[in-house]
Length: 412
RNA sequence: CGGGGCAUAGUGUAAUGGCAGCACGAGUCCCUUGGGAGGAUUUACUCUGGGUUCGAAUCCCAGUGCCCCGACCA
Image (cartoon, rainbow, N blue to C red; front, side, top):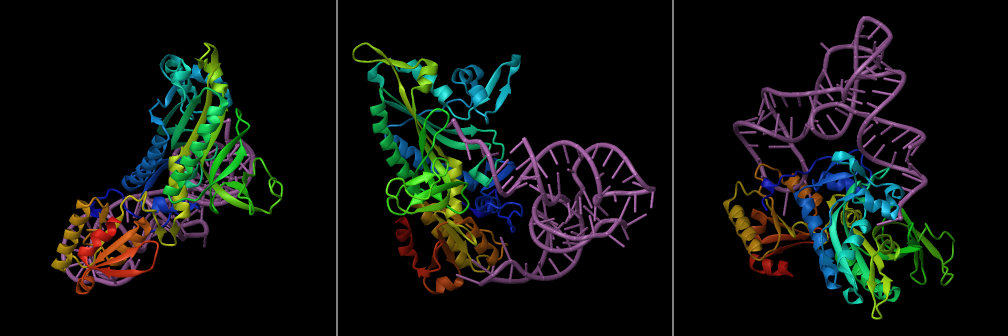
């Protein structure tokens, strides 16, 4: 993509009132725009990142048998009354339509998915089944904060699994833990599985937490046995497993999985008939990942003083191509154009800084801020040296590489 | 939902109760290309509603919004 045509622009100054790093960097670099507290627009580059994260999540969910659907964001009051969450879910957005009919904006989808599954699941032969969606969630948080980490409207993947009994759920639950670990590591994050307090309907849950100084959760980790527990449920000073010493860390919750049991199945009469002709309650699990929060968490972890450092797996473009002196030097211009086409032909994502009226300092500062993993510079100097300068965003090492080797090198 | 801070041009900031200014940006022109360069010229601003005052960006009251701390986070 030509940078001169890019809708968003970087800002010279960091937003002065933002403290959280992901908010500062994503706003300054023009990845997102804030409409009101906790509500963001995703601009062209930001949406690319979000989509890349979604694709990783999709791939891992599909791999373990998840089937993607899309449920409505709007749902009728009656469904929420059935589960007791019309009144019981503090952050639920409620609204009135014509004829004073009342609705909720989806804050979670048990109230939609359970009656949906009830229409199709009748027999033990129909189980297990896993349905997921990637959708905008709405929660009227009392205090949105920290950029993308806690919003009133955010992108979430929620999967619901349905089983004939607890043993089957337990078996699947382990698969999800493995899939979640893959997702986070593919996104460049080291997420720890943390035991945590559950909500109203389950005694405990498992959270995936990324340790960073700007997290809002506190996690106790055992130095000996790799047990991690949320402060919510545990506040002693020794590991309950092995009496090892505990370390306290701040962390961001990027995923949360629950065993729901039959609570929602009972509310909606979701049952199946077993081999003996007996009617049984379906057992459910629920598995969430905050897609937009994940994007914020990645920035919290991957950055330096100059800007963002995107992991290659989710970067909007792999390469930032920057000519220097292209308006004066025809060869610089033509070689850069040629390389741009060659990279595109190989499907290597490339942002071409073709802005002619911009000083080199500004271009390089933009490149650092925007954070593409590979920076390529072509100038009279690099052409004299036989090629193009290659620098990775996460290192200070600079090397000159001939054009014929370059494309091949970048394909790796 | 309790507490604190802040609110001036598109952005960032200045102005004892007395002519709202500067920088960046944006427009036009010139110049410039290895770390936000320079010149000429144009452009645009006091969150909302009340009050005090001869006079309010400035003081007072209310509201709204943003950020931060806490509570909350199925």
